[in-house]
Figure 1 (tube, rainbow, N blue to C red):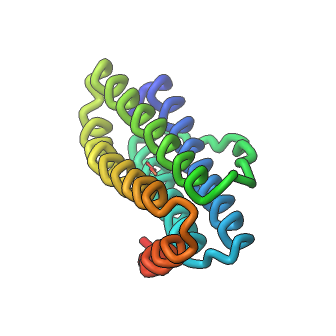
Figure 2: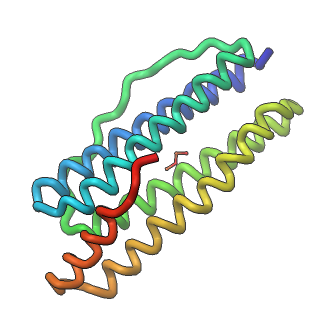
Length: 164
Ligand code: OFO
């Protein structure tokens, strides 16, 4: 059994994760519009991963005898100034998600909800990777600046990412 307060917080997180999927899918569409298929495919894989995060929270809440309640999903941005601007926004978004996860962990601790804390430990580690991979791409894009060849190389590298 889970408290109403934690139930509300987990439902909010499901929405955050679905919004993350929506945002990255929107970035994927933006990259497709630039004919950067590798970037687009990386973002599509990221969107799928975010849906799997949403489903982890969904199933956990159900297992804890809570009620999953879906909210409206915010409309994501559709355009960015450049690939670098899009990845900078993605990195910032992951920092926001990390702070949400940390806050959930604190709330679970305050209620001694140990199952929720254990479940969140996976997300805490995952966020370290999520922030690091976005930060690396921001770094690479900053290095190549306006070089078409550099962009082409990153595009090829990102296109090699496997979904999941
Ligand atoms: Fe990108 O992270 Fe979900 O949790």
